[in-house]
Image (cartoon, rainbow, N blue to C red; front, side, top):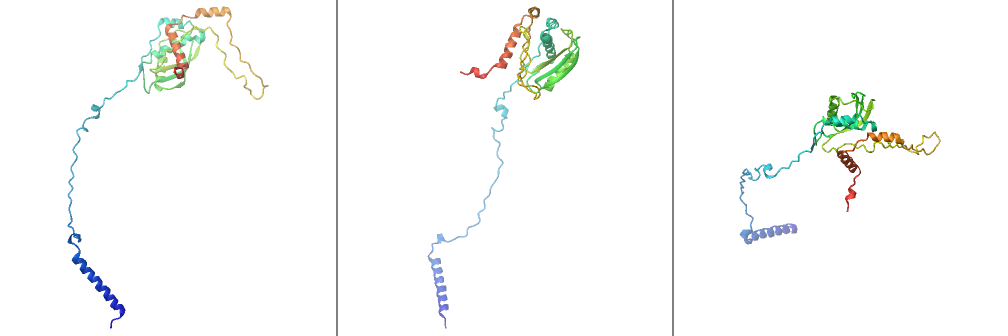
Amino acid sequence: MQTPQSAFKAAIVLSLALHIVLLAVYVPADTRLLKKKDEVIVIKLEEPKPNQEETIPLQSQQTLITKAPATQAAPSAPTAEEWAFASTYTLKNSKGYRHTWGKQVRSMMGAAVEGVDQGQVRFRIEIAPNSSVIKVETLWKTSDKAEALARKAIYSMPPPPPTPTGKPLIFEKTISFTPFATDDTPIYSGDCLPDPPAFTNPFAWDGKSPQGIKQNKPAEKLSPKALAECLKQLPQDSIEGVAAHNQRQLDQWKSNKLDQK
């Protein structure tokens, strides 16, 4: 004898079987799941053909523009007339002699070319009364090449005339070995004016001595007789010297604010 539970299970199984049969009969054929055949896709790799435009050299497509470096030829060596004047001019620590001596050195260094070798060098030089070089000390430099060429020129230059004062001449000189160096021809019209005294801070105090405001020493004035003798040594300033002086003043004091409108 069947129990109610077994009868219920049998009814469920029979119902599921009938539903499966009905679905198999009435479902359209195109909606049935079909087993697809495996599809094989063949990929053929070909080497890309070189583009004709890419084979054209880049330099043939573009015009290369190169800028030539700036150059400045060495100045001519001082003439006999320049040395004759320099050997007798005693004002301002033999100003003419110092300039002519530096011009001789620069003339033996060759042309200056824009690049890594350009630069400046400043020496402290001591010259004996007979014009022989006693000491050359490098104070600073911006180019090893400039220093080497200048030292070579100093020790191989033709013997210049004796110093104007007959005493050792000690001075500092900057040699410019650049294609942008300006003319350093001096002017002599103001050489009879006294040198301004060195400035000292009037309020400086060492912490021990009595405090007070120190007055700077006034510039020494030449007597009328000494001034007359001094003026006799002054040469006529050259056009080149005046032009070089004006250019140096312009380079030192010019301002781009002056050009604003």
